[in-house]
Length: 311
Image (tube, rainbow, N blue to C red; front, side):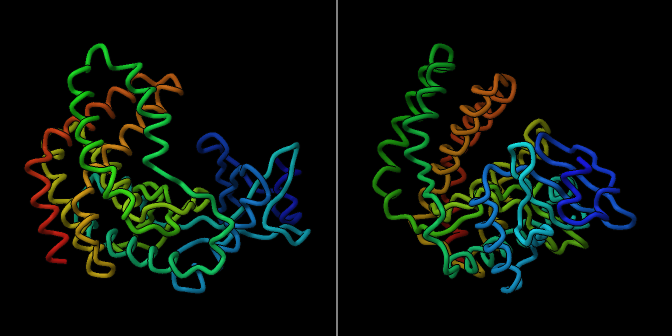
């Protein structure tokens, strides 16, 4: 680790590096804190570096990747690639959301402003396309069916019928642009109910812009789902989130119409990921969340339509 960190300067060789999760370390040097992350290749690291500079120049609260002593924003070490950037201090969003929902509007506004900036980014051609519907239909749906069809056959059949009859045509008309694709509470940093940091831009792709909004809403639901009282507060959080987004970047009526269907696809994708990782407990939780939302559709859809229209 010392040899790796010294690629950003000899002084970093003395940093105290502690692992956070797989491929991520928190590095402390005196009063300063940094994050070291493993990346898949140098091309992705360079794209991330250029994008973060653009976002910073356009007043987005991001932390810039540091250049090594060789002048590049990545370090190659023992066959892997790494990036290094200053830690953003504040309260992680996954802690804030457990306290209250007052930050929902702030998060919605911040996401809309991020989307506005991403939509104007000049170097979009190098980013891959992420087709959520294709990913679910060719990968996630078969995996989930194989796992749960015996005990949830009727429910999966009803869900599949609903998605295939209601989503296919509207999906093609949804606005597409660069999206964050990992916009969950843990990647947001707050201070005094102000968003002061957005993290992890290594998964940016071209996709439907609605993905980020639905992803954030389902991530929040997942964090409170085991608490029955907090679960019942989620529709209010969802509407505040949509209204906040709409004050900056109004959603189209079609986006409001398919909002819940995109949430279903996201949940199916998470279930498949967890099954492939051998996490059946996590898969069962996300199946429970999926069908809880599905059961609430008749109640939620008019509220979402109204929130989209009024914003």
